[in-house]
Length: 375
Image (cartoon, rainbow, N blue to C red; front, side, top):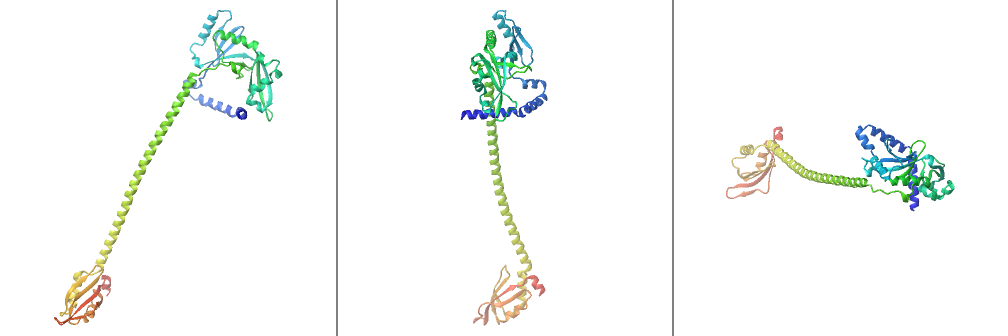
């Protein structure tokens, strides 16, 4: 399972390297960086200070990869202490945590071969080519330092192109020993191709590659985690504040909604009261006044009639109780009134022995003003 995952990862890396995206991103990053001020641009482009260790005409040379300037040329005949001092002066002002010592071997001292192998070899090309080293080179595995890189050049379907670099240990070990003696312990051994560029490999076997504790990188990692934690805390607090503000707004909305509902109810009650008031005012304006009704009754009832009770309700109903010589004749008498309508006796007419008159109860309705005018 692990091998399959590694193969898949290597295929993905190979596909990425062969795609135009890395080149585009490098170009885009360069264009964006070029727009920055010179000081900021230098800080952004600042990386590990790589020093190239090499040998020229028997002298040990130390060059700064960033500028190409030669920092020191150490002759082999001087005492070791002097060589160490010269190396220390060459590295003066360079933070050891930012320093990378790279032993650069010229292409003339290295055997290079392009191999085409099955695509599965991209998962661990160094191990796969190690089995074929004595067949692909004139050396045995224990006689050389080698490394393999996956080429970005196209290869036949189902295969991958590998670049093999191998250098005899007899040529590399003296260089390593010499630089180790003066305190320059190479972090890697790379090859300078004919074009002047590095092959971006490391001829040292994995067991001999030094392991550095990147204190600054570790500190940056911790600071990054702290920054992420602070951002999470700030976002959490902001979210909590937004939620509290939302809850407060919802409470305000509920309060305002309750007030609005109460206002609507009061408005409805007021509207109903106004409508009832208008209705009563209209009814009152349409019906004659009680004085007018009383005046009309006084004028029409005979002198022999006597009223005990006269009731006039809001709906226009009139109820009269009293005595008269001829109670039945009162219906016709009041029927000609312009203010009354539908007069009729209620109940039974009863004679009163004491007065010799007839007790009656008569009901009628008040004629509305419009009806009365029409009449």
